Every structure is written in C-alpha cells, then in structure tokens.
Amino acid sequence: MKRNTKRMAVIGLVIGCLIIGSVGAFALAGGNAYQDFKSGVMQTALEQNMTVAAEVNVRQDGASILSGEAVMQIDADARYSSSQILVGGEKLDMENSEKDGVRISRVGDQITSVTGREHDDDDHDFENSPAVLKLAEMVADLLVGDVKTHFYGGSGVISVNLEGAQIPELLNVAASAAVEGMASKPGKASAEKDIFRNVIENITITQDVSITRISMESRLNDGYIEEIDVTITLTGKDKGGVSHEIEITCNAAISDIGSTAPAVVDTEGKEVTVKERYHR
Image 1 (cartoon, rainbow, N blue to C red):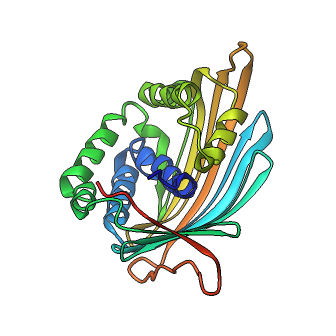
Image 2: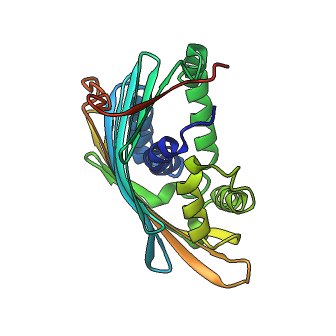
C-alpha cells in the first residue's frame, strides 16, 4: 500500500524545520553555548511525549510558494497532527492520527482509516536507541569546523548567524544533493504526492545550489528546547542557467513535554473509507 504522503508532508514541515534548526544548529555551535544547546537538543530528542507547533514559509525570488502551519502531538504509542498548507495556489486542510494500530487521515472532507502497524516496534526502538542518538551527535560534531566563534548566547537564548564562507562546505554539499535529487527524481506519480509535486514544480533551481545565509535563535527552558526560529537562504540556477534565491523560514514551539495526550481525528457521523495496511 502506498504511504499517505500528505501526512508525511505535514510531518516533514515540522520535523524538517527542527532538524535544520536543532540538530543542524548545534553542529554549528561552540564553547559554552554549544554545550548548553547540545544538551537541550539531546534532552528534547529523548522525550517521546510533546506538542510541536510550527509555521513555515518558502519564498522564491521574494514570492511565497509554500506557507503553512501545523501542530503535532506526539506520544510513545500515539500521534496526531493537523495542518493548513497553501502550496501551488491550493489550500490543504489535513488531520492525521494514529493509535492502537489504526491510522486515520482526513484531507478536506475525505477520511480514510487504515488498520495494521506500518513499522515493527523493533524499528521504533532502534531509531530511539542510545547508539543512534550518539551517532547523530558524532555526525553533528563533525560539522563544527571553524564556525564555533559565530555561536553565541546565554540565559536560555542561543543564536547563530552565518553567511557565505562561514557556512560549512558539508552543508552546502548536502543541500545541493537534496535539491538536485528532488529535481531529477520527483517520485512515482500518485494523488498522494501532489503536494510534493507542486512544491518541486515551483522550485526552479536545479543546479549550482548553495546556502548563502543561516540564522537561528533558540530558547531553552529547564534544559529543553522551547522555541526555535530558523531562516535559511539558498541560491541556485534553473535549467536555463538563470539564478534564483529561495528563503525558508520556520518558527517552532515545543510544549507540554510529558503531559501531551494526542487527539484522534473525529469520524463520528462521517463517511470513512476503511483500508488494511500492508505488513512488512
């Protein structure tokens, strides 16, 4: 069975933002600020119960091509997300929940219920194992390079601002590979992938991609990441060799750590399409 890619898009908006702003940012940190932020990232990453709210905007040459807001409620045994996204001139209103092996997805007025677990519990345990987290920490440390002096802050607020040559080459290589990979392999056609297709079609840069600016401000509370604001600017050329600039902004807040009770998509009195998930 094909995955619900719209659900993945919502999660991608939030998690992608946090990866760039959290794990990526602590890889750029140094000194005491580095240790404080690194500790906050790792402590937050170990939690399996929290609420994440995020706003994302992607602009190309000054014009917005994607904007949206999403809320995710996460627990060890349940998930819920809701989002409103505007992409390619189309507004998408979505909800997803998963509990006790039942995933319910709502896109507009269409509701689908899928039974069966998509992943084994062993996969979840592996992804959250100390070894995997340590590996992520080591990879991030590898990116530190010479930018330690650009990371600053204290009293729970930590920031970084990088431009041009200050940005590690490894990040530029990763960004270039990601954009060029999306342009060359957008994936098999399906209704579920319309949102990604619209984004890819509107992002015209396909070559010579580089990150020109990164700015991040994070706020910590009781050792956890509480808020994070990230802005990333990329430049590149389209197939015709014309240069373009893309700016990605994400503002995210993490709350209710340890006290989040994920909601379930309301299906009472509504038409629901029931499917069985493929087991692997």
